[in-house]
Image (cartoon, rainbow, N blue to C red; front, side, top):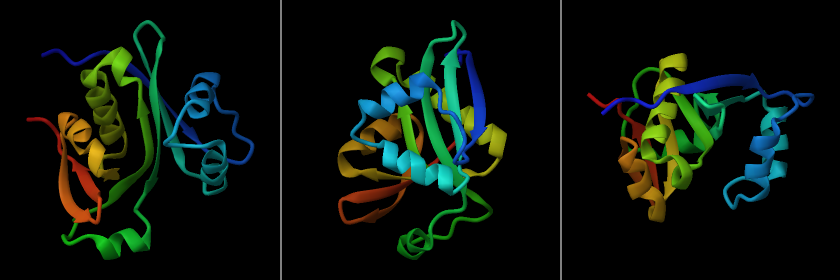
Length: 152
């Protein structure tokens, strides 16, 4: 299967950073992420990746930071060698674009930062992430920590 062509841009979030309208429109309609959380991310100098297809249509965005919070490290049952990129939020227009675009987006993030990618998922979303090649490494109540595995 051929990988979809994506354009991924990277923005370092600062208090003065202007967020693209396509991202703000998604945030306004999101149960996952809020403007307050975005402003908190801007105060922490996190990185936002924004993806579009070859026609320039918005695919999604994600906000990452290198490493992960101490309380996360304490909850993990297994060692994660090397550096990890912690995904705070990852929104992909899956219904419109399909899982292949989500996978391609995550691949591009991984290739840019060359670290493992770790996220926390609610139980109801685990199957969604598994279709994008994330693997459960630890359960914590009704949540699961998942790590991205490159498709071979």
